[in-house]
Picture 1 (tube, rainbow, N blue to C red):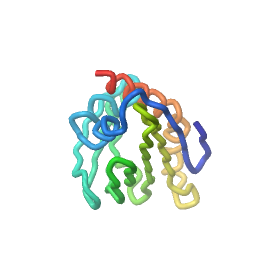
Picture 2: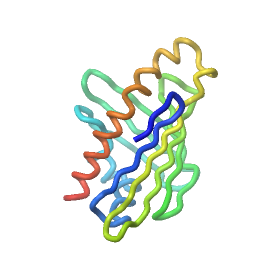
Picture 3: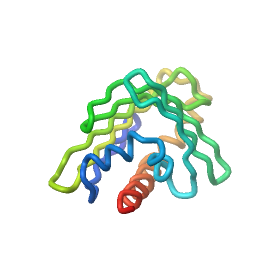
Length: 153
């Protein structure tokens, strides 16, 4: 895992074939079962096509975060690229790129999350996003742990 102020990159080798991992990311009935860090529940709606909208709401631990976005690129079963924008920081989307590489019967999953440029954020927006950026490595680690568990079922 590599993190900076501007982006987070992580890679995980999952014990599941690429098509199954792809389904876990591209079908909402799967995504809601694993896409959240510890202590949170995921609610989502998705129109899984280029130009389609995605909305993910994470609720838990006294918090309620919603991100919305648009699918920009879908290359089955290799890559998904979409934007994510926090509802309380409108106009400053993040970009998420997820790649799926077959490694025999396993899948190497890579996630790159590019955060909004801090220079374009107001001080109030910076105060809102800073703890989310700081918590992203832990949150993504827990989320991908949940994905690995879901894939075993």
